[in-house]
Length: 328
Image (cartoon, rainbow, N blue to C red; front, side, top):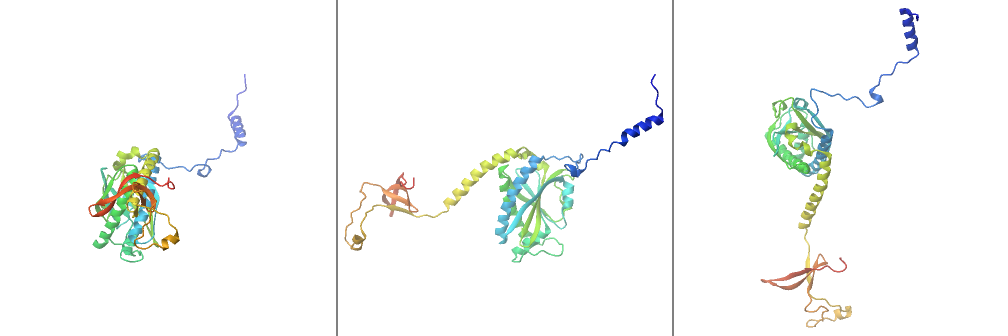
């Protein structure tokens, strides 16, 4: 029968076994990916792919908005996207300062209301610039006056117009102003615990800077969430760029003035003969009477036609599209 170990012998054996081993190191955040906090009471309802699509939409919006603001303020305005995050509505409202310059907007035909907030420093910089100043901000905190509010209405409407253009690759929306509120706590467009997507833009005008924040309730964007995928964005970008490019080119061509000239006859003569030409002389042309006249657009042959009269005006009838050999 094997000998039975006493308790002292068992303890000594365990101690000898563990004495030669080093304790396994506890993994830290610096050795790999940092841990990410996840709130199971407020799960993310918008996927990372959809967030990236929203970032693409508002990056385009930022570029268009910078050009629009530069034209309005007669100064260089730089607008760049800072973040696209999702919060509860109560958290978003608590992030706004008082007094605020916040508009309730509707993205027809989508249901519900959204918000667009202009930071106080940015609002007063815009107002000072529109009144001919250098974009100075006020030291005191106060609400906008009636005149200042009317100027900010112009800024907000132009911003919403560009916002609608940025959304066209995903869906057609028409942003319109539904109301104005200087006190964030009074704005209840969704329940406090409802998920919203907040987009923050950094705006720099002259030596001042501020933020523009757009708040989209999830319930408002839910009908178009399926379209907010990377694949849809790529396909829409290809189609949209082609259609938009064609529209831009067509609009540019339509506004261009050019000269149209009809060449009825041509003749080659020497300079000596030209200097001897007098009134009543006849120059024999190389063009036959039966040949159509060449029609030049901007000095380049594009058509051939037949000269005639339309009412009391000289005219030429286009017979065919016939470019010269050099232009083919």
